[in-house]
Length: 98
Image (cartoon, rainbow, N blue to C red):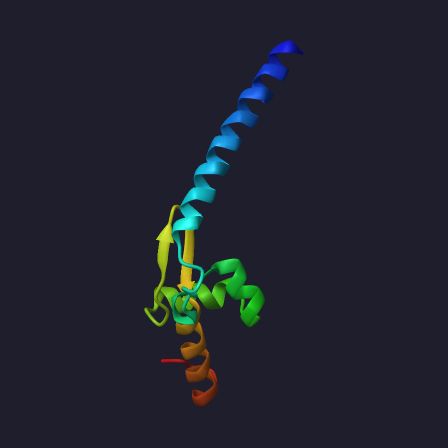
C-alpha cells in the first residue's frame, strides 16, 4: 500500500509539471488567432458521426483517391473542408463523387 501511495504521489507531481508546461505553451499562442475551418481535421469516427457516412464509404473514398487523408499511427484524419467538397460532388452527381 505504501508503494502505491508513493507511485501516486510521483504521478501527481509529473502531471503538475506537464500541466504547468502546457499552460506556459498555451500562453505563447495569441488568443486572436482562430483555427481556420479548412484546417480542421476529423478522424474517421467523427466523419461517420457528423456526415452520417459508413466506415466503408469513407474507406472507399480514401482508397480511390477521392478524399485526402493523413495517417498518424493507426488513425486516419481528413480535412473537414475536403469532406464538404466531396459531399457537394455527391449531391450534384446523384451519388458518385468521381
